[in-house]
Length: 101
Image 1 (cartoon, rainbow, N blue to C red):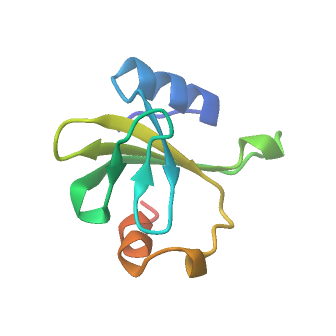
Image 2 (cartoon, rainbow, N blue to C red):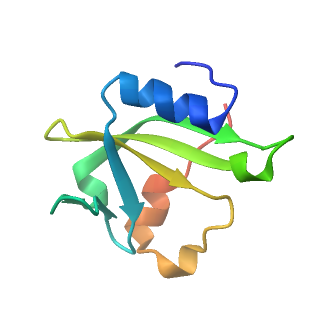
C-alpha cells in the first residue's frame, strides 16, 4: 500500500495508477454520475483505504476508498466520517467497513 500525507495526494496517486472513475455512494450501490456504471456490493472490491484526519485543514478529513469492479473498472469513493448507515443497504454498510491497520 502507498503512503499519502493528504487526501489530494491520495486522489492524484490513485488516478495516476488507473483509478479514474469517481464514484458516488447510493443506498445499495456505487454509481458513476458520468456513465451508467453502477456497482452492487458483490460486484466490486475495495483494494486500498486511506483515512485522513485533517489536522491542519478540516476540508482534508475523510476516507478514500480505491475500488475495482470484477470487470476491471477502477475508481475512487471519497467519504466523510459521519456517513449515516441508516441510509445504506446492509450489504453496502458491511462492504464499506474497514479495519484500522
